[in-house]
Length: 74
Picture 1: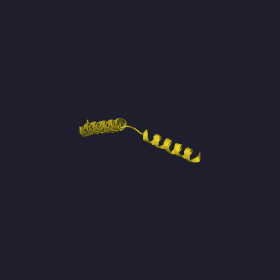
Picture 2: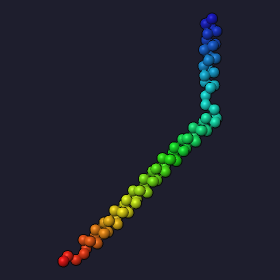
Picture 3: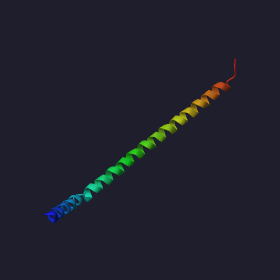
Picture 4: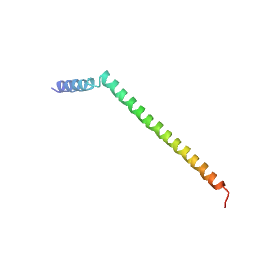
C-alpha cells in the first residue's frame, strides 16, 4: 500500500509539472513584457523631452530678464 501511495504521489507531481505554460502562453507573456518595456521607455522619452522644453523656456526667460536688466535706467 505504501508503494502504491508513493507511486500515485510521484505520478501526481509529474502531472502537475507537465501542466506548465504552453509555448503560446510563454510568447504572450514575452510580448506583454516587451510592450510594457516599450511603454515605459516612451514615458521616459516624453519626460526627457518635456524637461528639455522647460529648460529651453527657462533659458529664453533668462535672456529676456538679462535684456531687461541691460536697459538704460531713466
